[in-house]
Length: 384
Image (cartoon, rainbow, N blue to C red; front, side, top):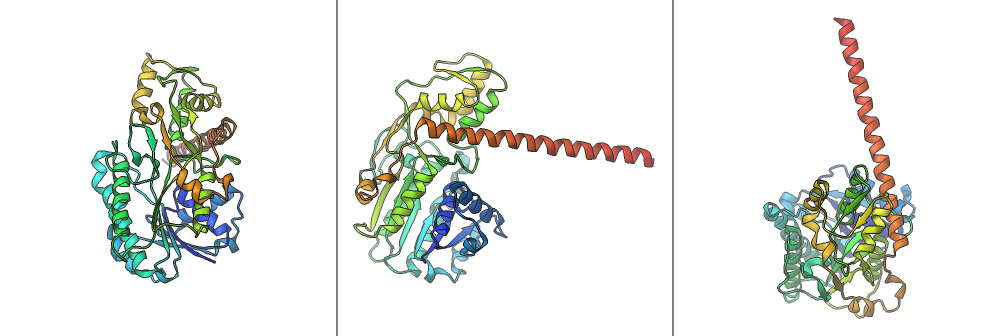
């Protein structure tokens, strides 16, 4: 039984990864912020296990240990934990995902300094062969598209605080790992746009990435049956399913031969999907017709403003190289899947079903509150 330390257990990837290790019988320690009693983290991991079809029973979850950590005093907090000699491997998935420029200083603190402090603490207290995995993003390659190698980048064009701090963390951790005998082996893993489980459709239902577009389409379908979007015909997008990301991560964890002290791998789909095909598939599931030309209506102008921060991801094409990961996992060709239209439709259908249920739940809650307020007013009037 290995002992795996994971951060970001309440997140999409971190929760799914923790659930996958638990399902293998490993011991998992989750460092969690803003979750003093661990309920959010435990719920996230159990939901991911159910979404993957894993058993999330009490005996399985007995191997889960959740430790609350105050990220405002990160170094001191790390030092108070006694479990470090037990930890065989770290998967650092937690991150501040705020894009805003005014949040850069806070993002730097959480994404860069805290990551390096975690790596240093692990290196100080564990066996020299124990590996540290850093969950970055494939888009540290910059916002101009093109071919992206599994290597550190020197001068990428970056568009937001999240990308800037992910890039900086990669560089700083890489420098730290090569300082004599001070740093443990470091693997940087870079997912592209992560979506739900190919077979079950499960996701954590948070509206980021592709789900931002899906949620927007869900709202638009109530107002119109047709929308115009200026998406280039040649644009293509790399969507990777959460089950592919987790499968590749587990294989990396299990593979010990031919490893390097410092590595960079892309956890992505083997092939891109045409962006128009992608968006049409999403729109079809909600009964919305897309026309790929410049919009004119006020509604379409509002849509343009809404998607502007992420427009580059629908107009540019990145070709993420995976030759290094393929070479390492050559005995597992099944690990290199691509999201197809059928899987995408299933994933989006699951998300839309969630939105419908969530809307009904909120409406029922509002009606209940209104009813109780009406009863209260009647009782007060009667009493007076």
